[in-house]
Length: 114
Image (cartoon, rainbow, N blue to C red; front, side, top):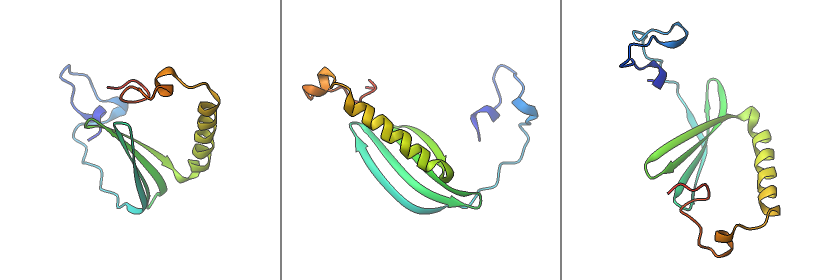
């Protein structure tokens, strides 16, 4: 169930004419084409290239202390995603190191989540 389909304890109506009595969406068969995982500090990332009847996509899941976040990138956007990641990587390399990186005493992760 999508979070905005759950009944509100405040009596709010569903958005966009949705009804809480709707039948659940059918399960769409997904085939895994390739998968990889990596650990960065205390975060685990799973990257899975999948395919379903609608097309191919990359699912990136971050798991940090039991909290899970996922983004899905359609295959039509993978080259653009790769280009942006390369730009961000280069920008990071061109910037001076942070004091905790230089001393190798960094926090639990680079965005301050502990």
